[in-house]
Image: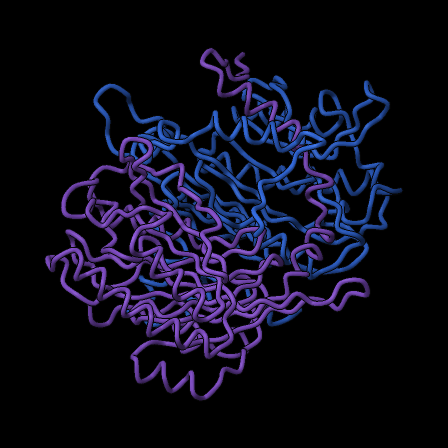
Length: 311
Length: 311
């Protein structure tokens, strides 16, 4: 895959003259995030450990009654270090080791919340259906080896860890879930979130996955972290799906990490921006949520008839 | 506003080398629509009448049991021809005349459904609050002069007309609505759709309107026409907000019309593509709509308590 585009942003910056670049970026991406100065020690550690390290910040207006609520979030994207036919436990251990190297640098950057990529302890195998050996990567969200590993990281670095894994739920007959475990900076498991809508689009198909990227990278109206997925399961794609970035509630976003290299994106954000933007748009005040709840409740009835007018 | 970007697509095509352009366009826009050959007479009429005329097509796979259902849709974007301090009736008449010129060319292109821009009979004044003289542009959706004008166009050209106007609803105390009237090719008013969520974002503010553009031009998962808005009310912006384009259910889209000139975009589409894409993704089969209806119904209750876990 030599010659693949490292990122759309880099390509725009390379070729489009400054006179038009600002307009193009504003239309495509909204406002720009400010660059964050990161410690030299972190930058050189990232270079030694062979991953990209970028930092950006989103600011909020000062308020009289609330102090700024500054949080640093770190998004990690990483390749799988070993071939997918290596023993499962060995692959997982290698991923734990790689993540530990990156999280140590995140700590040097003052990260408060670190987020790993979807199904980070395994090759991204969801597109292959649930079968061996991929199902053996599934773990308990509450006390599996990966959660225990993350609890140690959380305590060591005083960091909240968002750990998305393939979950095996033994209480409900061994059900598999695409879940994200939330581990407090104290090391306690605070809870988990499960994907409840997993689309089925036949066997793996690169075109369809491309469409997934397009849909996933849309900025949304609340603070939002977009994570790249690394693909190396039954088809070798070699590179990430999309690239990791953070979008702010005002529609601005950071540039994405490279689509080719491992990376850590550190983003400083003032959480006060959430309510500030909400108060500008007032969607929660002006939106007709009761109407939507009523309409949706009607539409899911088995004998619902849509309102189609014919002559 | 000399030097404003005519369109992002044109800028990408001008500067980015062919080796990278295909990747950039695929990531930003999905698949490309095919170019449509339009009659020479239509192209020269558009040139004489000083508007851009572009044509594209979306194809579907052949099916055994359904014939293709080919429809040509025309999107019109137009500046207001007269200054905003001209008498209301004179401004409306000038817009009717301009639209008639463009619809005649749409008919030459075989358009079956023509769509005018939001609040097409007036300067785009929603951002100024509802006040005189803008409120005088409001009309009855069922038998106002603009609906009567569109009924004549529909019959003359055997064309469905989507006519978005500022509606005055006399039955409910003269309420104003941002509505779209649907007129059958027979000339009958089939119905109307009203915007039910009109955000309030303070007084007019260019930055906020820029955000609106970014949000509006997102491709959505069903067949979708994005219309530019022309702004020339209490602040003179001079140009369109965004540009008109059509996105197909598979996420591909046509390029946009110019952001500076009047235009007509003719798009041929096979409606069979809608169910074909729906059957690939199966969202309606796999989506948990009953759960969403239940969750939303709970969340709109006045004493709803969100599930927040604290240590």
